[in-house]
Length: 238
Image 1 (tube, rainbow, N blue to C red):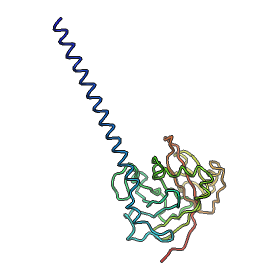
Image 2: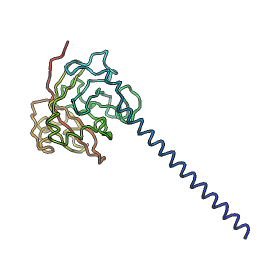
Image 3: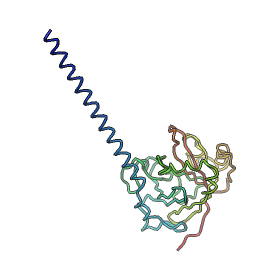
Image 4: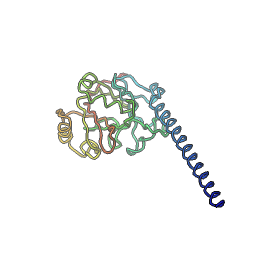
């Protein structure tokens, strides 16, 4: 009987220690999660990047390029869109790498690797993470409101040797597998514009160059939210 009681006591103590260890582990995981959220948030708030921002009608000069992979700078006043644009050798390179080349969960805003850096293609696509609080391309959600879109339809893109005005005209949801948008160059502009019309109800002009800004939706998976703009060439300040 005493042996049984001793064994039972040891089991109870072991159980208590296991529960305590589990609680400590959960607490540490919670602390790590909060610290990680703070780190990710601080990355999205990095104002040091703004020292590289060109004026809206200024190409990105060599001395203002963050790295050789920077293709330009995109800005839409009043929306939170004010970012350097990178381009990697594939669409994974800057998914979790900041413009300085360091690891970052929030990644960078980047141009599809299949596009020309000067945005000379009929359709160019720029990607960014959907971050909470409207950070990075989480700010695209505001364009779901048609009134907001119409009030914030003008922006700019400064490339390496040229500049463009942006005329935002449509916003819509689609799938990451929709090649009309996510395989630039694989479809004619008539097909691209037909797809935009189908998804947004807005007619697009196939004779004009289009820039698509893409991010995930809050629901995740393969769903994407896209904001489409016409590219309007502008004169570059000397």
